[in-house]
Image (tube, rainbow, N blue to C red):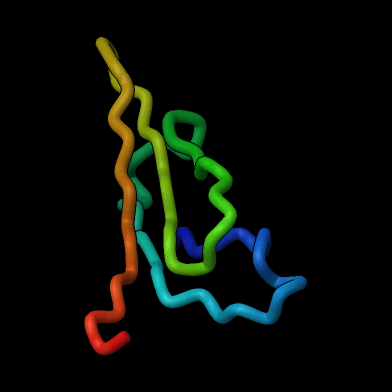
Length: 63
């Protein structure tokens, strides 16, 4: 499970995003990309031929 990595903890924001990574995927083949928002989680996966970047964004449509 990947969630906001604490980069916004000093401003008191609560994380509203989570990204689940299958435990069968080797943890050496993916990593979290730091991003300065508690509403965004970015992970990057390295495959045999290329990288895949996944961006998970919480959007509050009520604002």
